[in-house]
Image (cartoon, rainbow, N blue to C red):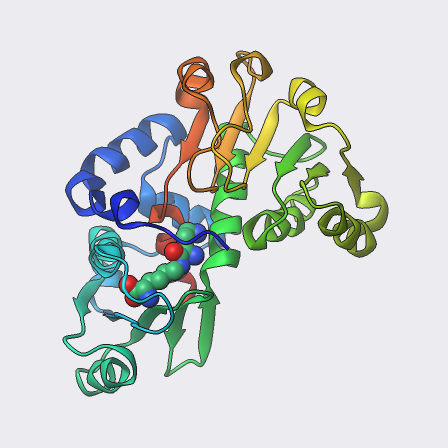
Length: 269
Ligand code: 2YG
């Protein structure tokens, strides 16, 4: 589980407008549009404005991440929700959110990032939401994944969830992780629907569609990329070298929080 650091999220509020414009240029839809596309809804900003979302800072474990609550609040506000960060933290914050009539609660400790809808008993986990968001991003980038080969690098919570959604989209999935047992678990679960990749370097040259979900920062090199390579990268930090970044251009989608949080908000309604 990758733990974000403040510098990865602190600028999100100031850059969300530019982020959304860049997403629209790459995908042909904005952040709300991609979140709706991901879960098959058609919520409008006006509809979301009726919903109140509380973000509750959680101090357990390694404590607060500077700017994390503010980033989550700003992403949700940007797509339309009425949001507030509770004054109190932890359980007092949950109590405050309830008293201030929040419809949705967002909170994250070191291991789990959840959105809760108390009235509808809906629980949305960031790992699933992020995996769904990035698979649908890759689908948008490549005009559909049916019968296409996709490589998943990294079988952590997001990478392994991505396999499930890729198979649902009809893709044939190659999986790679440094830890062989993680690949065995996936093989056991999906049998012939997945292919275990022994050598990621050569696989990277064969696959055009890639989900980069590792915490490493240099898994994808420039010579793995050509004009038809599309990369959806939920992994933090971004797993491309500087040269690879220059070469992939607009065929890459990566962010530390935005897509996953937007999908969490809609799924929790
Ligand atoms: O409330 C706070 O400020 C802290 N308790 C937040 C801690 C979040 C820890 N989790 C992570 O950094 C990531 N798993 C969040 C999601 C990354 C995007 N998939």
